[in-house]
Length: 532
Ligand SMILES: NC(=O)c1ccc[n+]([C@@H]2O[C@H](COP(=O)([O-])OP(=O)(O)OC[C@H]3O[C@@H](n4cnc5c(N)ncnc54)[C@H](O)[C@@H]3O)[C@@H](O)[C@H]2O)c1
Ligand SMILES: Nc1ncnc2c1ncn2[C@@H]1O[C@H](COP(=O)(O)OP(=O)(O)OP(=O)(O)O)[C@@H](O)[C@H]1O
Image (cartoon, rainbow, N blue to C red; front, side, top):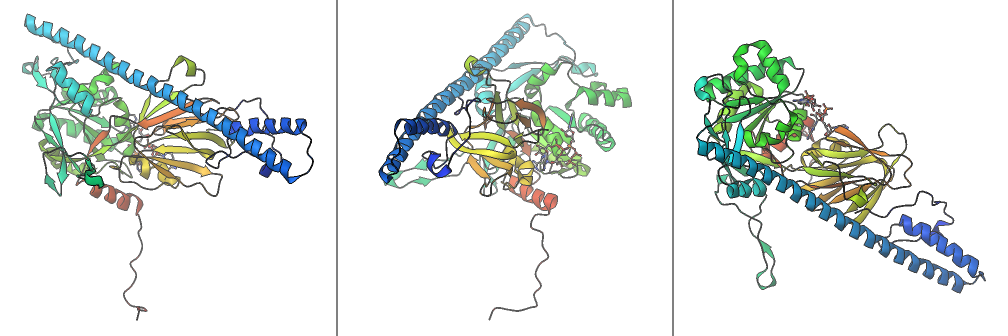
């Protein structure tokens, strides 16, 4: 998996650049080849006395080039083999996780079937138990499309109202479709490439505006709130009351928020929460809709709670910027009314799946728990004042060595955040791409890149790096990357569906106009010189 590595004991003292620096095929000097090639040349020089003729120089430079090429090929072969191994390892881990999930479900299914047969549905207060209508159906839906929309909940009867006890509850099902010229077309359209008679054409583009239509009514809402804000706390209490009394919905909140609500009034005892963080892993199976009350950070927080499929999120703006929070909190009743009724436009925001691969773990096929980021993963120098030195590979091909303050690998949703501040382009959130944006590169010729969604980007701290690097995920969870450690990033299979106020294009343009005053300039006056 690892790209070429430098031996820390090797010296990097170079002589005359023009004669002793080998060039790789792509024009960049390869660090491993350089060191070895230099040694080879020095040996050659010792063995063959220079007679000062052009012939000798040509011969030496040819030998040098051949050695450099051979070394480069060997290094590339090694990188490819290691990357392939890492990819297999990643697939194996995904498969194992999937199998575990299946086993877990089968176990729960078995328990529920037994319950059914015995006709004894027990009340497990505050802990709804989930099972699927049919195993196959859940597989189709959850694994293929990311959102388990047909799963069934057996409510443990946490509602204070006694007739709610043992109520049978379905997770609301929905259908996604592409909007066609503003009309709702029920067909899923895929990007079809035709090559009839040698003419390549593409039919419908798949990346149209996406519409979500409920097939059964949403029943359970999770409300996530920004902490330490009085206005958010007041709005949350009001919204919970309204959703319960007017929409008859089951409501989940974080333990902190339940405590706050109960401190206000015992009326809120119907509000559900979780005791154990492991229950968060099952939230996507219980919740039809997530409401966020805060700024972009609260949307990031909501996304980070779902390590797999994410239910649709309705983000209300209670922060100062709000690129991902298109709904105004003053109109929450109308907004939620229309969202619960549907159909709604959604933006499927892609996430990046990031694995830290430790140098020591490489032979043991171990990676740490992956992080899913909605904005970006950043690798920087942390508190060290040294330049970061990062070797970057894209699908095993060498991209560049970043020498500067660091590197941002951003989603298109994150393109208006840190990546923008570092000089990256703003990209429509529905574009499936990975932004490769350096932070203060010490080079006159470095420009940000936009890579296609299907690539795997690998960033390695070389052995000759003067200091470790630090990686952070959506601005949180800092981890150190020591020399030899690497970060491997690819597009995650679970996007974050966020409800749109109008549609994803309108919302995106409004956010850059309102949030950044993008391209705001006084309109040129009509009077003045004219072209003749
Ligand atoms: N120099 C910078 O611009 C810089 C530096 C560090 C972090 N950040 C961003 O902050 C994010 C974490 O946000 P937070 O709210 O938890 O921390 P925070 O409270 O420090 O807020 C950072 C700011 O970034 C804004 N922001 C977040 N996501 C955005 C997006 N997708 N588009 C436009 N603006 C966005 C937020 O609204 C907020 O104003 C990181 O993911 C990173 O993108 C930016
Ligand atoms: N439910 C939560 N629990 C813990 N932390 C949270 C939660 N929601 C948000 N945060 C954190 O609180 C911080 C501020 O949140 P957020 O960005 O939403 O508010 P804000 O700072 O008012 O927004 P803006 O930056 O747009 O003004 C973020 O770092 C975010 O990660």
